[in-house]
Image (cartoon, rainbow, N blue to C red; front, side, top):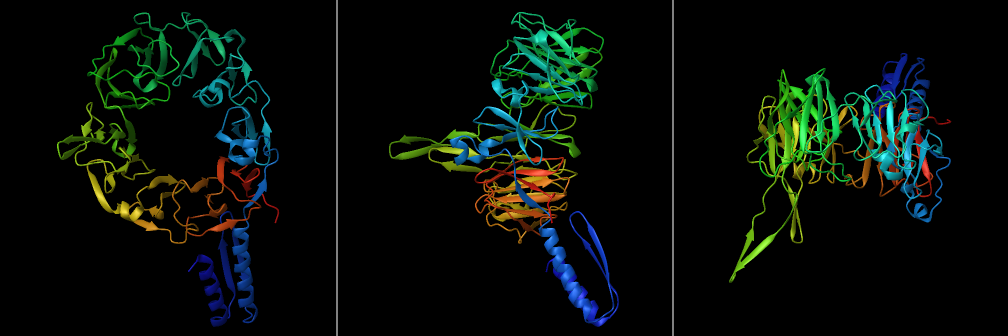
Length: 538
């Protein structure tokens, strides 16, 4: 029985049995309604019924869907596939709204909650990947833009509304960003000296290491290690291994770190977006490119010394246990068959391996008896390893052959509630809002802190696996928003237990993104875009 049904039952019972004043407290998703009814035994049940019915209707109608002005398709491909009007949503300095890419127009637009407006300024722009990969935001919230058309570096101070070009960088050769300090280094030619930009101001005092004629190509200030790390190597459009690693203690000189890697391992290509963890006198650097091995360094008075490496692969950090967990190995492998006369021998593929790296360890440890799930298609086998880190003190979840194994900081263990025959073969597990959700072809499940699993039987769609059903959480509303692409329907829920459908003039085929202020969800209709909003005329 729903919350509203219980309230109606209790109100009705109180009206007839006790003939006293009734106080009804209706707590909705944003509001609380306190109502006191009189003692009339005839009027009370009628009023109670009307109030509860109105409250249910109010909560269901609290959200509405309105067309987004300016989102009409202009190209034939957009008529057929309207999602192309708004792709790759981002929040960018200088814009209060959500910036999206009209993919086939090569134009950027700003969604302000009601309208889609074209961005006319020189920056940001889509050319040369500038919108997706060319924006660098500093810890102080000012930012640089690596322009392509025009080819110049742009700058925007924190709180400003427009980007300005730094004229001295016109036609620059390349640039690399220090995420730790928020400074940008720019070279005007391939053999030129790097110029340092700080706060949008140019300085010609950059002294960077060079190794075997390879200049510095990446740099990262690491305050917790009291210094700066740099990589040298040739500038290339595709990721390539670095030729050396350097470190400079604040106020000191650059020193090259002697690194002795096992055969087949390489120094990662850059430090941008690398996850750097410092604890117990160790600096562990996990690059953003899983094709390169993580490197481990030990802090000394002179700087850093090489301490070890870990296998390349997909690594995740579990904060409560201070442990890194990763899978390493080839994920797609051929099924090789060899015949000896009448005998057919199938060569066993090399399984990807799971590893852990504890807080004091410099060598990764193999997790024994943990095998990834796999699928076979034709002559190939596809492995699906995964590690999920949830919010709070939840254990790490590691996908294994029969189900999800948990890691509590000491041991890995398979548990019955997380078997695939219960939660589905393709579970998508994440923390969304205050809840830990499991989404799969078997349904939607709530994962509690005690690792119990509860299926949401009242979820409004069948087989809600991720390719067909999208779930967002809007913080400002404290509300979940659900889209079933098959039916085109949209639902809202405060707790993933009660659901209300949002009326729409068209089928909704997907969500493009969430705008935080004013809170709204940008949705894709059949002919244009819509905004799911709580700013509705009632």
